[in-house]
Amino acid sequence: MAASEKTLTNKCTTNEGWTVVLPRRSRQRRKATKSGVLEEKQEPWTPTDSQTDPSKEATLVQKMERCINRIERSEFYHTFRDQIQTSVVDYFNRVLGSEIKMQMVIYGIGSIKLYEPPRLQLSLAILMRRDFSWIGNIEVFDPILSATESRVLEALGCSVMSINEHGRREALKPTMFFMPHCEAELYNNLLQANWKLNLLKNMVLFGNSFETYEQHVSLCKNSPILNSMGHILAAQGFTNEFRIQTVSDDYYNAFHDSSWHFFSPLLETELPIINS
Image 1 (cartoon, helix red, strand yellow):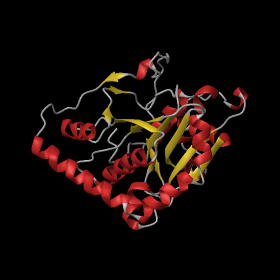
Image 2 (image 1 turned 135 degrees about the vertical axis):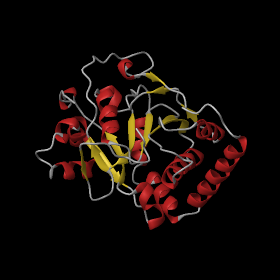
Image 3 (image 1 turned 30 degrees about the horizontal axis):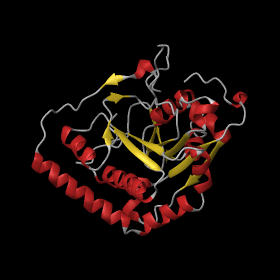
Protein backbone atom coordinates (compact mmCIF):
# COMPACT_ATOMS: atom_id res chain seq x y z
CA MET A 1 0.00 0.00 0.00
CA ALA A 2 1.45 3.33 -1.05
CA ALA A 3 0.05 5.45 1.70
CA SER A 4 0.96 8.69 -0.03
CA GLU A 5 -1.46 7.95 -2.84
CA LYS A 6 -4.32 6.42 -0.80
CA THR A 7 -6.01 4.90 -3.85
CA LEU A 8 -6.67 1.49 -5.38
CA THR A 9 -9.06 0.23 -8.02
CA ASN A 10 -12.76 -0.41 -7.42
CA LYS A 11 -13.24 2.69 -5.31
CA CYS A 12 -16.07 5.05 -4.48
CA THR A 13 -14.54 8.49 -3.94
CA THR A 14 -15.67 10.86 -1.22
CA ASN A 15 -15.92 14.59 -1.47
CA GLU A 16 -13.28 14.93 1.25
CA GLY A 17 -10.41 13.70 -0.88
CA TRP A 18 -9.77 10.18 0.42
CA THR A 19 -11.28 6.98 -0.89
CA VAL A 20 -13.22 3.96 0.30
CA VAL A 21 -11.21 1.01 -0.95
CA LEU A 22 -12.13 -2.58 -1.64
CA PRO A 23 -9.86 -4.94 0.31
CA ARG A 24 -8.15 -7.86 -1.32
CA ARG A 25 -10.07 -10.95 -0.23
CA SER A 26 -8.48 -14.07 1.23
CA ARG A 27 -10.00 -17.47 1.97
CA GLN A 28 -7.12 -18.55 4.16
CA ARG A 29 -7.95 -19.40 7.74
CA ARG A 30 -6.72 -16.88 10.27
CA LYS A 31 -4.70 -18.17 13.19
CA ALA A 32 -3.76 -16.00 16.15
CA THR A 33 -0.14 -16.12 17.28
CA LYS A 34 1.49 -15.30 20.60
CA SER A 35 2.80 -12.04 19.16
CA GLY A 36 -0.74 -10.77 18.69
CA VAL A 37 -0.53 -10.63 14.88
CA LEU A 38 -2.66 -12.88 12.70
CA GLU A 39 -0.32 -15.48 11.26
CA GLU A 40 -1.56 -15.71 7.71
CA LYS A 41 -0.90 -12.03 7.14
CA GLN A 42 2.66 -11.88 8.49
CA GLU A 43 5.20 -11.10 5.78
CA PRO A 44 8.87 -10.32 6.42
CA TRP A 45 9.77 -6.90 5.07
CA THR A 46 12.91 -4.90 4.37
CA PRO A 47 13.33 -1.69 2.37
CA THR A 48 13.75 -2.35 -1.33
CA ASP A 49 16.84 -0.15 -1.41
CA SER A 50 19.64 -1.43 0.82
CA GLN A 51 21.89 1.61 0.49
CA THR A 52 21.66 4.70 2.67
CA ASP A 53 23.31 8.08 2.24
CA PRO A 54 24.39 9.80 5.49
CA SER A 55 24.05 13.23 3.92
CA LYS A 56 20.49 12.50 2.80
CA GLU A 57 19.68 11.13 6.25
CA ALA A 58 20.98 14.32 7.89
CA THR A 59 18.98 16.48 5.48
CA LEU A 60 15.78 14.55 6.16
CA VAL A 61 16.31 14.68 9.94
CA GLN A 62 16.65 18.46 9.70
CA LYS A 63 13.52 18.66 7.57
CA MET A 64 11.60 16.61 10.15
CA GLU A 65 12.89 18.75 13.03
CA ARG A 66 11.70 21.91 11.27
CA CYS A 67 8.31 20.28 10.70
CA ILE A 68 8.03 19.24 14.35
CA ASN A 69 8.90 22.75 15.53
CA ARG A 70 6.41 24.27 13.11
CA ILE A 71 3.53 22.13 14.33
CA GLU A 72 4.49 22.58 17.97
CA ARG A 73 4.06 26.37 17.66
CA SER A 74 0.82 26.14 15.67
CA GLU A 75 -2.72 26.88 16.77
CA PHE A 76 -3.64 23.52 15.24
CA TYR A 77 -1.49 21.61 17.73
CA HIS A 78 -2.61 23.68 20.71
CA THR A 79 -6.24 22.91 19.81
CA PHE A 80 -5.42 19.24 19.21
CA ARG A 81 -3.60 18.90 22.55
CA ASP A 82 -6.39 20.70 24.41
CA GLN A 83 -8.93 18.25 23.02
CA ILE A 84 -6.92 15.31 24.37
CA GLN A 85 -6.60 16.95 27.79
CA THR A 86 -10.30 17.82 28.06
CA SER A 87 -12.82 16.17 25.74
CA VAL A 88 -11.26 12.71 25.41
CA VAL A 89 -8.98 12.32 28.44
CA ASP A 90 -11.50 10.09 30.24
CA TYR A 91 -11.66 7.76 27.24
CA PHE A 92 -7.86 7.46 27.16
CA ASN A 93 -7.81 6.71 30.88
CA ARG A 94 -10.45 4.05 30.40
CA VAL A 95 -8.31 2.32 27.75
CA LEU A 96 -5.17 2.60 29.90
CA GLY A 97 -6.87 1.09 32.92
CA SER A 98 -4.15 0.03 35.36
CA GLU A 99 -1.40 0.27 32.73
CA ILE A 100 1.11 3.14 32.82
CA LYS A 101 1.90 3.31 29.10
CA MET A 102 -0.01 3.01 25.84
CA GLN A 103 2.04 1.90 22.86
CA MET A 104 1.53 3.62 19.50
CA VAL A 105 1.38 1.77 16.18
CA ILE A 106 1.58 3.87 13.01
CA TYR A 107 0.40 2.19 9.82
CA GLY A 108 0.58 3.69 6.34
CA ILE A 109 2.63 6.78 7.12
CA GLY A 110 3.74 7.19 3.51
CA SER A 111 7.01 8.67 2.29
CA ILE A 112 8.35 11.28 4.72
CA LYS A 113 11.04 12.07 2.18
CA LEU A 114 8.76 12.89 -0.75
CA TYR A 115 5.57 14.31 0.78
CA GLU A 116 4.71 16.91 3.39
CA PRO A 117 1.48 15.32 4.77
CA PRO A 118 3.37 12.23 6.05
CA ARG A 119 5.96 14.52 7.66
CA LEU A 120 3.20 16.49 9.38
CA GLN A 121 1.48 13.30 10.54
CA LEU A 122 4.69 11.82 11.92
CA SER A 123 5.52 15.14 13.62
CA LEU A 124 2.16 15.10 15.36
CA ALA A 125 2.77 11.57 16.66
CA ILE A 126 6.24 12.49 17.95
CA LEU A 127 4.90 15.61 19.68
CA MET A 128 2.19 13.55 21.38
CA ARG A 129 4.84 11.20 22.78
CA ARG A 130 6.84 14.20 24.03
CA ASP A 131 3.88 15.90 25.69
CA PHE A 132 1.99 12.94 27.14
CA SER A 133 4.00 10.73 29.49
CA TRP A 134 1.53 7.85 29.11
CA ILE A 135 2.39 7.35 25.43
CA GLY A 136 5.09 4.71 25.11
CA ASN A 137 7.05 3.29 22.19
CA ILE A 138 6.15 4.19 18.61
CA GLU A 139 6.24 1.46 15.96
CA VAL A 140 5.97 2.48 12.30
CA PHE A 141 5.26 0.63 9.09
CA ASP A 142 4.63 1.38 5.45
CA PRO A 143 5.89 -0.90 2.68
CA ILE A 144 7.07 2.09 0.64
CA LEU A 145 9.57 3.28 3.27
CA SER A 146 13.13 3.51 2.00
CA ALA A 147 16.26 2.53 3.93
CA THR A 148 17.06 6.22 4.45
CA GLU A 149 13.57 6.94 5.78
CA SER A 150 13.81 3.92 8.09
CA ARG A 151 17.10 5.18 9.51
CA VAL A 152 15.61 8.64 10.05
CA LEU A 153 12.58 7.19 11.82
CA GLU A 154 14.90 5.32 14.16
CA ALA A 155 16.92 8.50 14.75
CA LEU A 156 13.67 10.17 15.80
CA GLY A 157 13.06 7.47 18.40
CA CYS A 158 10.67 5.24 16.45
CA SER A 159 10.95 1.52 15.69
CA VAL A 160 10.41 0.38 12.10
CA MET A 161 8.61 -2.97 11.86
CA SER A 162 10.28 -5.81 10.00
CA ILE A 163 6.91 -7.51 9.42
CA ASN A 164 4.08 -6.32 7.20
CA GLU A 165 1.05 -6.96 9.41
CA HIS A 166 -1.49 -5.62 6.90
CA GLY A 167 -3.11 -3.78 9.80
CA ARG A 168 -3.89 -6.99 11.69
CA ARG A 169 -2.23 -6.29 15.04
CA GLU A 170 -4.20 -7.60 18.00
CA ALA A 171 -4.42 -5.10 20.87
CA LEU A 172 -3.31 -7.40 23.67
CA LYS A 173 -2.47 -4.30 25.73
CA PRO A 174 -3.50 -0.62 25.49
CA THR A 175 -2.58 0.47 21.97
CA MET A 176 -3.10 3.65 19.97
CA PHE A 177 -3.36 2.96 16.25
CA PHE A 178 -2.30 6.15 14.50
CA MET A 179 -3.61 5.84 10.93
CA PRO A 180 -4.59 9.20 9.38
CA HIS A 181 -5.85 8.90 5.80
CA CYS A 182 -5.20 5.17 5.44
CA GLU A 183 -7.25 2.97 3.13
CA ALA A 184 -10.52 1.51 4.39
CA GLU A 185 -8.98 -1.94 3.98
CA LEU A 186 -6.53 -1.30 6.83
CA TYR A 187 -9.21 -0.05 9.23
CA ASN A 188 -11.39 -3.05 8.42
CA ASN A 189 -8.45 -5.45 8.87
CA LEU A 190 -7.65 -3.88 12.24
CA LEU A 191 -11.20 -4.18 13.52
CA GLN A 192 -11.54 -7.73 12.20
CA ALA A 193 -8.37 -8.76 14.04
CA ASN A 194 -9.69 -7.24 17.28
CA TRP A 195 -13.34 -8.29 17.07
CA LYS A 196 -13.52 -9.37 20.72
CA LEU A 197 -14.53 -7.46 23.83
CA ASN A 198 -11.18 -7.89 25.56
CA LEU A 199 -9.31 -6.56 22.51
CA LEU A 200 -11.54 -3.68 21.45
CA LYS A 201 -11.36 -2.17 24.93
CA ASN A 202 -7.58 -1.88 24.52
CA MET A 203 -7.81 0.13 21.30
CA VAL A 204 -7.70 3.81 20.42
CA LEU A 205 -7.84 4.63 16.73
CA PHE A 206 -6.86 7.93 15.16
CA GLY A 207 -7.87 7.96 11.51
CA ASN A 208 -10.55 8.67 8.93
CA SER A 209 -13.97 9.45 10.39
CA PHE A 210 -16.12 6.32 10.57
CA GLU A 211 -19.19 8.58 10.56
CA THR A 212 -18.13 9.91 7.17
CA TYR A 213 -17.61 6.36 5.89
CA GLU A 214 -21.13 5.46 7.01
CA GLN A 215 -22.63 8.54 5.35
CA HIS A 216 -20.70 7.91 2.16
CA VAL A 217 -21.57 4.22 1.92
CA SER A 218 -25.27 5.12 2.26
CA LEU A 219 -24.88 6.89 -1.10
CA CYS A 220 -23.36 3.77 -2.70
CA LYS A 221 -26.08 1.29 -1.79
CA ASN A 222 -25.43 -0.99 -4.76
CA SER A 223 -21.66 -0.98 -4.39
CA PRO A 224 -19.71 -4.12 -3.40
CA ILE A 225 -17.82 -1.81 -1.03
CA LEU A 226 -20.67 -2.39 1.41
CA ASN A 227 -19.51 -5.98 1.86
CA SER A 228 -15.86 -5.01 2.24
CA MET A 229 -16.39 -2.54 5.10
CA GLY A 230 -18.47 -4.76 7.35
CA HIS A 231 -16.47 -4.24 10.52
CA ILE A 232 -16.23 -0.47 10.07
CA LEU A 233 -19.98 -0.15 9.67
CA ALA A 234 -20.84 -2.67 12.40
CA ALA A 235 -18.55 -0.89 14.87
CA GLN A 236 -20.60 2.29 14.57
CA GLY A 237 -23.04 0.95 17.13
CA PHE A 238 -20.45 1.08 19.92
CA THR A 239 -17.94 3.71 18.74
CA ASN A 240 -17.42 7.04 20.46
CA GLU A 241 -16.00 9.37 17.81
CA PHE A 242 -14.45 12.79 18.33
CA ARG A 243 -13.46 14.81 15.29
CA ILE A 244 -10.40 17.02 15.40
CA GLN A 245 -10.17 20.57 14.06
CA THR A 246 -7.62 21.30 11.36
CA VAL A 247 -7.93 25.03 12.29
CA SER A 248 -6.04 26.27 9.21
CA ASP A 249 -5.47 25.28 5.59
CA ASP A 250 -1.83 24.52 6.44
CA TYR A 251 -2.87 21.25 8.05
CA TYR A 252 -5.97 20.39 6.04
CA ASN A 253 -4.31 17.97 3.59
CA ALA A 254 -2.65 16.00 6.37
CA PHE A 255 -5.53 15.79 8.85
CA HIS A 256 -8.89 16.68 7.31
CA ASP A 257 -11.82 14.49 8.36
CA SER A 258 -9.71 12.77 11.03
CA SER A 259 -11.21 11.56 14.30
CA TRP A 260 -10.46 9.80 17.54
CA HIS A 261 -12.34 6.50 17.86
CA PHE A 262 -12.94 4.61 21.11
CA PHE A 263 -14.76 1.27 21.17
CA SER A 264 -17.06 0.17 23.98
CA PRO A 265 -19.29 -2.84 23.18
CA LEU A 266 -21.05 -3.98 26.35
CA LEU A 267 -21.79 -7.59 25.40
CA GLU A 268 -20.21 -10.18 23.13
CA THR A 269 -23.58 -10.36 21.36
CA GLU A 270 -22.98 -6.83 20.09
CA LEU A 271 -20.20 -8.21 17.90
CA PRO A 272 -21.91 -9.81 14.88
CA ILE A 273 -20.04 -12.20 12.61
CA ILE A 274 -18.97 -10.18 9.58
CA ASN A 275 -17.89 -11.85 6.36
CA SER A 276 -15.33 -9.29 5.22
